[in-house]
Image (tube, rainbow, N blue to C red; front, side, top):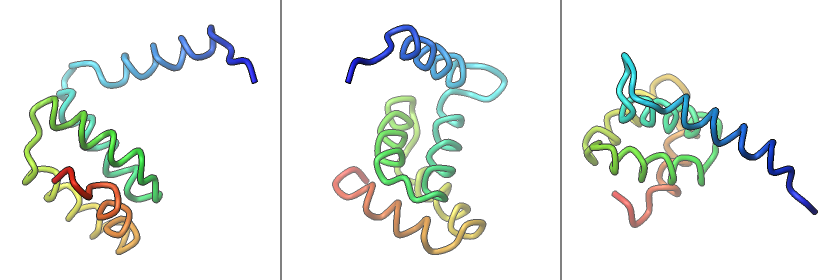
Amino acid sequence: MRFDSEFLRKIENARDFTFSEGVISRKYKLLLAMALDASVGAVEGVRVLAQLAMEAGATKEEIAEVLRVTHYVSGVGSTYTAAHALKGIV
């Protein structure tokens, strides 16, 4: 399968725009996205976003607290997803 390079470039541009510094910092945008991925069961998304959030300055404690809120809102499935995603990371 050939990838549409223009389409991939547009996706990358949208990602860069979405997670750029603004009124909400990059770190908090990444933590928010991680919570959303945990809530929908996206293990790899949680893993990647947690790593990016830590690179942006998030602590393990901040990740844990965000996931506590995610569990409250979305239930135990989000905790199960995060546990699998974060093995060896936090």
